[in-house]
Length: 340
Length: 176
Image 1 (cartoon, helix red, strand yellow):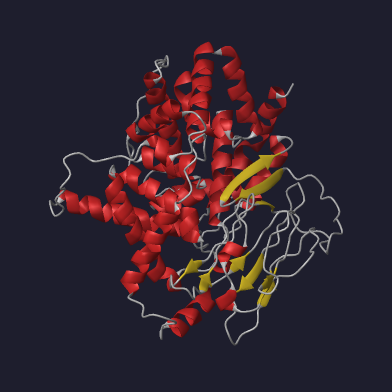
Image 2 (image 1 turned 120 degrees about the vertical axis):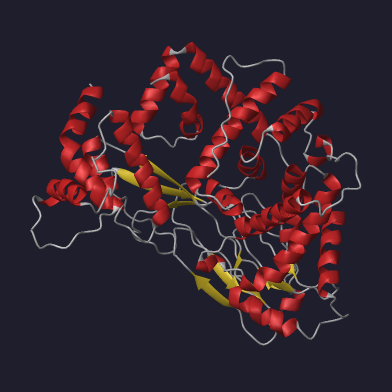
C-alpha cells in the first residue's frame, strides 16, 4: 500500500469499516512504515481530543427564549387556542412517541401516567420500538408494537390525559430521551410531538423465535452481516472471498434498500481494487448499451446474445456478476495465497 | 423536550457556520419557529422521517440564505468584529479550559465544507447519514469530507499545540 493513499483510509480503518483483507493490509503497512504510523497516531490523538468536546446543555433561559419566540411567531391567544384542535389533528397524523428506558425506575406521578420500562439485553438484538400515539381528550392511547424482541416488559405506558402529560416527569437516561415539542408555552402546555433519536444496533438477520424473553436459535454464520447503527450501515465479512463476494453481489439485487446497495458496492469496489484485478471492460461512448458493451457483458454472463434479443439494461448486480464470472477464480486464488 | 435537547447543538452549528455568537442566537430562534411550523409536514419515524437531520437541514438552509444575503450586500453588519462564544462557556470544561480553547480554535479553522461535516459528526454527534441528509450530500461525500476535515483538524491542532506532523496535508476542495 502506497503512503500517498494511506490517509484516505484513516477514518474507515479506525472505525472498522474496511473489510478483512484491506484492514490486514493497512495494519501491515502501519507496522512497516514509521512515518504513516506516526501520522495515524497523530490522527487518532487529535480526533480523540476533538471528540472529547461536549456541548453544554441548553440553558433554561435559552429554552424559554426560544419558546417565547415561537409563541410570538404564532401570536397565540391566552388559554387553549381555537386552532389547537387543528394542530392536535395534524400532530396525531404524524406524532409518534417512543420511550426507551434503562432498568432504573423513572419517578413519575402515578395519577398521571404509568411507565413502561424496557430492559434491553447487553448485546445486539432486534429492537422493539414501542410507538405511542399521543392521546387527546376524546381518544384512547394506541400502542403499536413494531417488532417483538427478547426484552421482558414490566409495565405499560398509558397516557391518561394529554393536558396532564408533562415531560418534566420523565428522566433523561443513558441512551434514551423522550422529547416533546410544545405548541404553546402557556401554563396548559400540551405535548404535541415526541420523537426519540437513539443509538440502535440492529441485526438484519432473519428473526428467530421472538416472544417475551424466550431466546431464539442462533443463526448459522453468514459470510456477510449487516449492522445498522442509527442510519449508518456497516458490513462484517467472514470467510474466504470466494464466499464473501458472491454473497455481496447477491445483496445488490435488493432494490428496496439503495443505501445498503451503495455500501455493498463500495465494499466490492474495495475488494476489487485491493486485488489489483481490472473492472469489467466497457466501451467509453455507451458503457452499458452499446453493441460492444452488450457483447462484452452478455457474453460474460449468458454467452453470445440472440440476434433479435432486445438490449438489456444492466444493473450494478449484473455488472458485478459479470466481473465475478470473469475474475472470480483469479480472486479466489489470490485470496487463498494471501492467507497462507 | 426537543428544544432542550437540541437547542445548544443547533446554536453551536449556527455559530460555527456564521462565526458570530449573537447572530447564531437570533437565527436559532428562527430555526425553531420554522421547525414548529413544519411539524405538520414532517414525516413520522414510522414513515422513515428522522427528526435530527430534518432539524439540522433547516438550520443549514437558513445559514445558506444568510450567506447569500451577505454576498448580495443585503445584510449590513453593525458589528465590526464577529464574536465567538468562549469555548469555556460552550463546552463542559472538565478542568481543561486551555485545551478546550485550542481544540475549538482548531475546529473553527477547518475550512468548509470539511469543517461543517466534521462539526456535525464529531462534535454534534450525528451519524454520517444524518450529517449527509442535513447538508444535502451523499453518504460517500460526507464521509470523504469528514475524513478530510479530521486530517485538516489534526494538522491545525498539532500546530497550535506546537507539535507539527511530519507530512503536510493538502486539503483539496472537491465540491460535489
